[in-house]
Image (cartoon, one colour):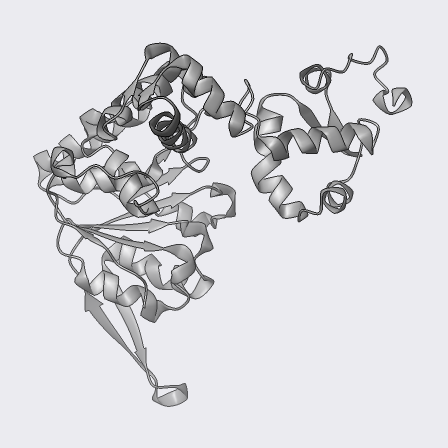
Length: 353
């Protein structure tokens, strides 16, 4: 049966939580401690927040459940945060599950039958639901009706059971993998985009207070610049720098302390990590700057090609350090400059290397 968690709409009291370092705090506790508890506490994503506020106010005025909502965007940008904040704003319960856990309709059925009127069912990575579960959820989302088939063959019969109206919130990092029938059943669709440096710096300052540490303005900006526009990455960097400061600098995070901690973690001024730079260096050293096939690069790095495509390349592409061409991956002049290599004078990079 799918793992379930229920939120009762009450606020968490951060001030009552004892201080714990990241070494004795598990990932779930760490995320919950830093996650905003109300919509007004969310930093950034102003368009998304404004639209959600309209949806919430309208649902309260009509005394109706919120319309089904689909949140899409890259990982680490706050889709789960929005999904857990909404029930608290509505004063209702929230059931949480994940697409990969829903292998058959029987895995989804307990969540549906336990959902009260106006409650929220949050399905993370909803694009990974099995086709059988997807077909099963269609009448639930449209008519709040569960169709259960008993028996097989000529003796089979279908029982229709009504359930309380509730809200399905789906989150996905790959909206293109959703089928059109499922996507169209979401009344509201919101895209969560990358954050600005100023927004990430504000998030870091707030979360530093929640972690019972002190961070200087310049240090927060330095971490924000290297956070890839992603709050999750910013919080991970903050956790590491906080631990470094506790051991090396009596707990205070100054810009010098932050730079030393980031150097030890091998995160450069663009936010590239060791594996990112190794990708670029391999593309230059072995493939002459490209073009090179993804499989060939993966074999050279001893890393699966899908790992490169999903985890390494998106950020390099966003920064304009590499290009995807019909012939393969190529490093750009910007990528060469970052490695300290003079950009080629000819567009045919392969001839120069």
